[in-house]
Each structure stands twice: as structure tokens, then as C-alpha cells.
Image (cartoon, rainbow, N blue to C red):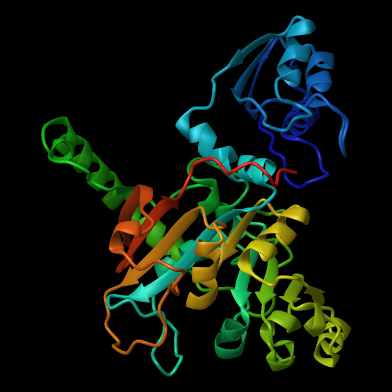
Length: 404
């Protein structure tokens, strides 16, 4: 029976699976349990999962990857083995590592795994010079963004985005997109079927590589109709649904601004659930404008310094393991400079608007092209008429020093 950890403080995957088996009347004694992450061996907000598996008398446990939490870190496996349970540890395959990447990043750094998302025209604009950005990308790309939002713990925008775009940052209530599934966890359980790795050499397009590429293209074409149907489904009317595409949580909406007074109280961010937090300067947090926002149910918090790194640290302290930076170029550049972006998801629309006011990423101190930040594990594909590029930024493991 399957089980997954739906919400912090709730039953872990092992406990959920055991409860589901009991409810279905299916015995588990002598059986095999497959888990992504090592069963915990300590009492936190829930009892130890290793003890629950021992009590259920399972015979074998297959572990995808050992936990990096120092309260576990091999202790769960040891407890199972001490109780006579056979344990196999896969050691973290690529797919397993992808599933736990945000959790591991947060545990090791104390900051959330950051995803920078933007959509731009072919000439690199995220809006016209007049500020109009609706819409750069097409409905299928915006459907992928819905899945991105449903896979993170917080969405961050800057004050200018609120003032110019009046976004809701809400989710489509699409039950098919949430609750796990294969593929990339930061895309709601799976990557769009059209995404393929970037070709790196001639070897990738000859011989077996050509056969594999043809098979991938055929599979993408076969899945395109289904993909298009649900990605382009209209967004639900009205306010945010009670549950998002993960069926159990809604991301925190975060606004970063030095000018609280310029945020319109009529903004849809402040008129619809879920919760919204405004990070501003310490002085801004005690201003009359902040008091008005607080009276409307918005949390206003002062940070010193108010920068992307401070925002990431504050969100990590709140328990946010993954964050979607859906901001304008200025804040995006600051986030890149602060090292709080671990992945870039970019959509390039086949259109040209000209101008030069609004770009996707503001300057962050680079003067030589040789110093540009390279992306790794790059994947490119078509989503509707837009090109989608996904790549990882910087080190695969965080630097020590912030861990929770």
C-alpha cells in the first residue's frame, strides 16, 4: 500500500502506508517496504518510523537514500537491523536524489532550495517598456507554472510585481497534478514529456543516440495531446481553492519591498487566501502602511538587511524547504548574486517586443562573459509554442554554515 508524508507534523510516509494497509485489511508482516528516505529513529512531532516498521514485523526495508538529518543519519537503518529486519540501501540514485533535493538542501544550508522562474520574449523582455506582461508565454507554459507553484513552500515576488501586475499567485485545483508521482518534484511530480537533455556531442545524435532521440520524440508526440488538454484547462474562477495541486498545502506568498506605503491594499494578494507575508525594512514594518496591511490579515516583518539572502534565511527558519522566485529582474539578479537560486526554469516565447526596460535578471556584478554562471543538467523542450529551459545553478551541495 502506498503512503506519503503529506504535511509537516503529520504522519510520515511509513506510518501512512501502514495505516492504509490496516484500513484495507492487508497484512504487512513478513513483507517488504520501499521508502525514499531512511525511516526516522527519533521522536519529534511524530513517533519513530523505524519503531513502527519493527512493530509491524516487516521482514525487509529498501531505502532509497540515507537521511542527512543528524537526528537520523543512519540510526534508522541501525535500529531496523538491530531488530532483525533486512535493510538494503540504494545509496541515492539520480531519481531518488531529485526527490529529496529540496529537503537535503534546506537541512544542510538552513535556506530553501530556490527556483527562479521567468518567461521572456525572443529578444529577452519580460514585459513591454510600458510594463505590460500579459501574456508573454502561452497557456501550456502557464499550466506548467501552476505545477511549479504547487510543488514549493513559498512564492516570492517584489513590490514592483505587485504594483504593476497585481498577481494572485494562486494554483489551479487539478488533482491529477499533485500528491507525488514520478519525475521531478519541483514540477508537481513530473517533467513535461517534451523536455529532453541538451545534446552535448555528436555521439548523442548518431547510432544508439539517434535511436533514443527518435524514441523520445515519438513518446513526446504521443503524450502531447493529453499534456495540452490539462495544461490549457481554464483556471478556476474566484479565490484560491482550499487545497492546491499538492492536495495538502498552499505555498506562502511573499512580497519583498522597501516601500510598504506603495503597496495597494486592493491588491489581489491581500484580498484572497492563502497567507501573504511582506518583508520590508525594520522602519517599514512599524509604519502606518504596515499597520493597515496587518489589519487586513497580512504579516509584515522587518529584515535587516533587507536582501535576497536575508529573505531566504527567514523563509528557511519558517520551515520553507523550497521557494519559487517569480520576481522581476532586480530581485532575480539579487537572488542569483546571493546564491539562493539553485534552479532556473525559463520560458522563451516566439515573439519580439523590442525595448530594453524589463529584462528577466538584473545585473549582479559580472563584467566578463567568461564569468557567466553556467547551468548544468540542462533540459530543453517545447511547451505549447514556447521553449522551456530547465537547468541547475552552481554547486550540487550547499556550503556549510546555515543548517537547521
